[in-house]
Picture (cartoon, rainbow, N blue to C red):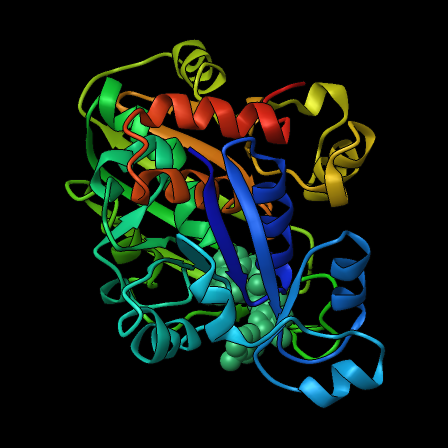
Length: 337
Ligand code: NAD
């Protein structure tokens, strides 16, 4: 069966999900929406993607792009929509289009959890999304927390987690926002990441704090996990190395920072220089009694992309989550180096 997919919101996440859908043998990218004319839509046209307009039809036509219709026309042709619009618009689109037209939809982490029937990280709770109508792929930070905490909880049990998110200020293309020269603490405790992680890891006791810093490349998390059972550093590293969509990187080979992680992604010829795996530093893992410490870097623009692909399979009835992850990883080259 080939699943017909429509992409709404062709921005940072949307353009990556569109490319990832186009790579899957069991999916067809029916089209993407343009909201206003810009270089991204020119690239979509060059890639041969069909373009539908949510707004600015005249502007498209003036620039020699003839949209094939509007959002309603796109929805009519697809089995599932992936909504990658900015936060709150996904919910508006659900009420305006997806519910009345009874079309399945995948939302992103900017939406509140109640937009969907399940929040989703494929390797943690694939089955919760199976055959659901609405699924929310959690944010980049929450995806990172869930991917690495899940195997710890499975193998050693977790009493509690304290995690601090050091967040990139903006995405690299964004010339409007900051901070440029400040460290901005999130003055809300816990930060929203902890409760968000619990929408996937329901029984994990986690408390989070966060701050934004002047960098665009990646987020960094510092985690302290109180485990129920003792483990050695080697056992923890071995577990991370064997877990999908995680990469253990090494200071010893010169990967000392987020800058070098991004350079490494370019060197292994990743599309757009993306690093969808969560990167954990080998030398940053420590154990004291049953307390585990580790540092991980999150490429915010790409870690949620494979999750969207698995979510499409889950909502359209593909039962084997492990197999879906394997297919997605192979098509996208995840964990291939
Ligand atoms: P973005 O601003 O880069 O892209 C959003 C796209 O939607 C733009 O192309 C914009 O033109 C289009 N758009 C705006 N209003 C629209 C409308 N009414 N109808 C259709 N299209 C519209 O945003 P993004 O960073 O890709 O974020 C999208 C979602 O993904 C948000 O929920 C966000 O929280 C989540 N997310 C973002 C990141 C990240 O770091 N960028 C990471 C994980 C999850």
